[in-house]
Image 1: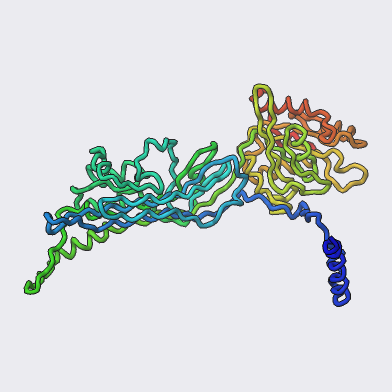
Image 2: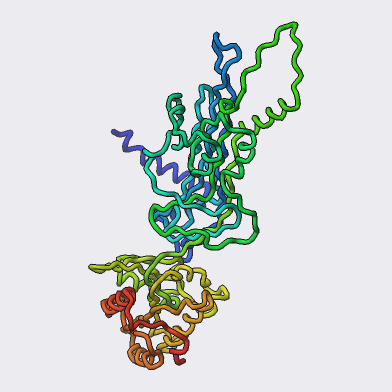
Length: 492
């Protein structure tokens, strides 16, 4: 008991002894805090909406050279199995990821297993599945055009088509459909996801030499980028961007092949002819598995939203998004609070609208001022644009911009990014109506901007939010009286 009470005193003596030797120890001890360090908003990781990806499919496994010998068969019969097919690199569309920050620049799929004796086929290489967000657009620098993966159940696949599986039953190989045993060329042309090369005892050397051309069409390498070759817009959608190589052939597929008999002491070895050497070279090339395809891609994220909130920095876009939906974006009393787009859902009884909050734009954003206008790609697919302006930006001697000039600058930046981007149904949300003098500015805004509905709101107090919701729903449903905002309609 006394020993337990004496332990704190011993610790205090140790601290006192160290403090007398080193005063820095006292400073570090006094400045200790168990409160976790909080990052400032400007240190927040920016959204990665553009990503360069190098993908390589798995190489095919090598075929086996094996002979089954018995006392009744002196030379033996070939029973070497085929090599397994390499894995594919697949992009899968998922709602669990936000951007491309979780991807690696270099991705390789698994290699197929080698064939073994007793006509055992090598295992199929493991596929490399990368999850990408909804709205991913694929641009191709090098390689083949990606292909969509059809949804199919694993019960319909053969054992060697499943990654990591191995067929050991000889009867299963013998009972394959006759369509798969006709020729290697038909097998390769039928599908990209075959796990093996079928029994090909009637395959000739000429057919096997052209196997590379029969596997898939080879695209000519070009340095130019091929834009918008594919896109992923639905959850669970898959796209193959790099194919695995086909496995090599086992010696069971070679016609008229048998094991050489053992040489006796007095027997003279026979000299191989040129035809035998050529056949051996062909067989060795067939036995080696093919290399997987390579592709260099540029992935670009274009968020799929119905409504896009566009405005100057600190105009109240994030506050408005939190008022009309359940989203909780970061809000601050300074410019460029939003460093990446935020999404929110506006739910009605019969309709659900997705709203995207775009980081603030300033005049000259197309010249890479501020955060630039690279985030405007997220509103290229929107149906409706909502311009959010700050009524109190130029009040009380503030160095701000009047709301009608804000609208003019926003429209010009949209047109600099993509011609015709502002030609879609739009409305104006005049925020911060609760400020002193904002009512007069709102009346002046209605005189200077014509042909487009203007809603007066206070996003903080949630005043006028119901009218904005009704206006967005009307524009998304395709109201006949909807109109877009043009430069001609703004008088500065």
